[in-house]
Image 1 (cartoon, rainbow, N blue to C red):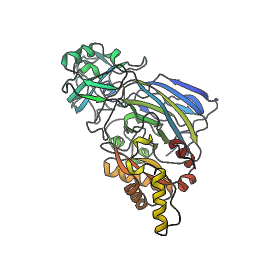
Image 2: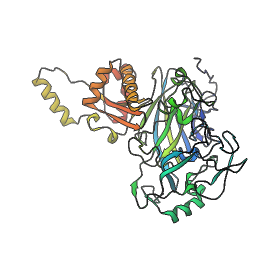
Image 3: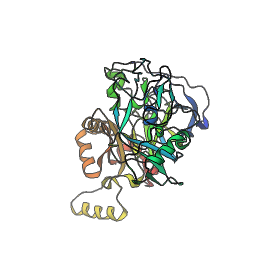
Image 4: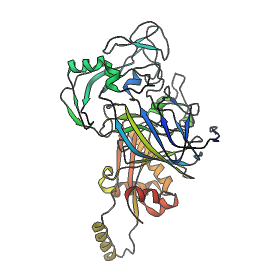
Length: 442
């Protein structure tokens, strides 16, 4: 298929500020801001993902992500390292929970093909009347419009320093709902209806910690996709779909897996993303206040917030999907670099057993996606093997004895994390980046 080739003639800025959002579709047709220079910063005020856009039919993609930012010098076949310098929550409260779909209010996919069950309007304009599950209504005919409802939901309020949250009862949830925009801290240009309007309150008095991260962070795909479907699992829903956003298998290969929902994508981490359109088009959204691995409820605590990124162009690093360099404490136990004492002991064992030299190895985490977890694991293993010019069985062994397979999101996002040979990372131009990130001097 043809790849979009956007000409870059403007000089990049040191910092690009972002406060505008896509209408749910991300791809070559998206307006690009910037460019930002290589080594420059992107600062954004992001809107909640998932539930708010899910109940707002005019948002066509299931999320509300930022307009992409062009990166000066990034060409198709390169990669960009996205250094996450800061993530700060600004919402005072949020609501979430497990969902059910409401038949008749969508055409094949309730995330990206909403339809009014009463008048048949597609991606219809809506208005808010009161609070509760029927508060979002078609502006044309007045019928309830949200294609989702809660099976079990909660409203959670945060402390003043965004360290701890507590689920609240019906009375407080309804108070929060009556001032939903303020409590959600929606950015000025956001058009979503905040899910706080629904005032769910099935869980009361549950306390949890906050550890925010970006559910969406990456580069623009080479084909227009609903933003929540820029991944191998949600993207599979588009194959043969009955609506206008359907794609074929070849087009889906143009995805960049920006919709990760991997909790390692937090402040201090680096996401290395493929460049599949000229200028890369870095976009972010779907900030989560916290999430356990797997996001097994289907959704977690979507919040507004501010994000600071620093970008670095990696020339000639052709990759199919993202690589993550997690914060050191987020690495699986076996993928953490050996301490000085451990390495000294390993060297002694090597000498006693006729091994002349220990391998120099460094941690990396390769993302795999697919329609199910088994497919995602296979995809991650194959991407890791291609990155290192290795075989899949070798990667399986390395992930087994020096790492782990971690679930980002069910149904199909995983991390294949392991200690990779430094020499092979050097051959791909990654060794110094990884060493610098983990403070490991050569």
